[in-house]
Image (tube, rainbow, N blue to C red; front, side):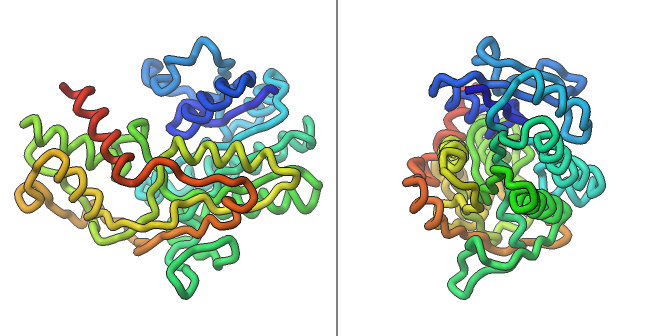
Length: 321
């Protein structure tokens, strides 16, 4: 099968590409050009010779048409986005264009070229904002109430997917994914910032870890587990919307405590907080109920919160040695 991944050079895209290659599929990917070409494919350099890559951008309709035609894809995984919540407050218009309108461009391109193509849309727990059920969990029917431009843009894409599914009978599935991390996560995201900076402190290269609100809680899983859920959802007979989450929540402070504990660092000595790193509006707790996904596909997370952080710390210990 020919499969197209937008954002193939990102964290999720790289793990998904590895998974699909292992299953024997032909993997195609859209890469957005930047001026530092050596960084564009760093996450997929080890498998680049097995991939079919095209320059493109979700904001460029023509490039999507070209990639769909060249790849002859039967499935498309949309993993491309402006995905940093804090940055979405600084670039709200671009975030809406890339993350929201970008998916509309993709869905419309598929409808025009071949509406039989199956589409996976990576929706986000950020769509819930501070909305939760009475027991503190978010579920598929929990009301959406996003509190950031990123969450709003993701909700636009999510609702667009449902609209194309209902209006045109297309196979468009939304995976509502909660936070997921790995050593391939960008270092401007919290978990990898904590891991990298802590290793730098342990090696005497810096003297402090500076964070915003350390009391917010998130449901953290491993990207490698979550791309398996993406694939499983497109193997179903019918499209759907399903949450992918571990069902366990941890505070930002818990991340710091585990990483500092592993490296034997004193939290009181090295951790500082600064309001500059806080969001204008904050989500206080996210914890997903993935019962529907588990029931439909048999999926379950295999990598624990602690094992995930250990892997990230070990990566930076090796990388910064």
